[in-house]
Image 1 (cartoon, rainbow, N blue to C red):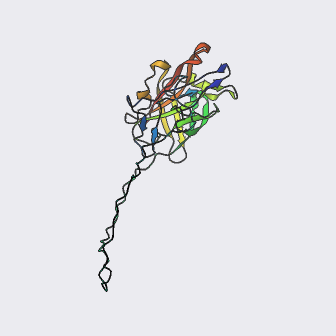
Image 2: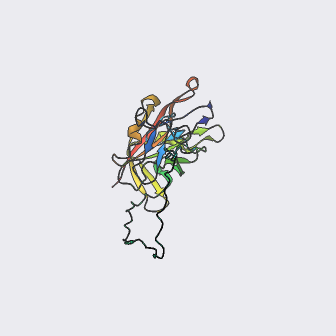
Image 3: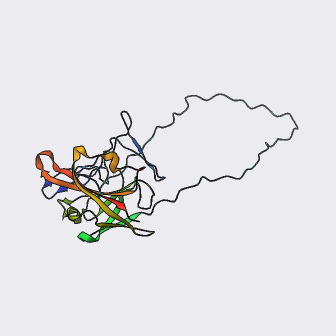
Length: 258
């Protein structure tokens, strides 16, 4: 996601890297029917994330880089001469048997999350669906008053996988955003994800951590096949101007409530 964080302290980059598929491979394929994403490098840029993140977490919403091999065009065509029909013979129509088509079953997609609410700390902000930037990082909303949802991962209505939300904690243009309150979240707090359709999904916080960006387990953060959980990520830790941004990602992890 190509989201760079420019904060009130100066230019900085908040990124969260996606797990790399392996040497020589640059494709990330979602398990849900949403779509496949091709990344030059699996990285996510975040200004702010609730569940798990560091200011350099991948999480920018600049766009997605999707691509695939093109089928090679044939270099030559065989010359085929039709066999002439005998004079006076009627054309013969081929026999075609019609069979009923069976449409493949399509799994119901999870409702799109629209709002993140943490009543205990007065956090309430809109959610915007984001993708992958051209540089392979997660795209984040430029305005810190909006948090991004990684739409190629799990949704709040899915039965498995992590719902990843990420946003900027501040920016030079807009100043400090609501995600500064994320640091006040404690274990046991309730987190609500409200969707465009369907019931409100509630989670209970199980962990709040500052994680150095270099040690962030992105495979766990973006897990699409593991247990249901919510991951909210943003920048955290001290600001290191020499290294271009916040040292850590603040990650809030929450499990779904019964």
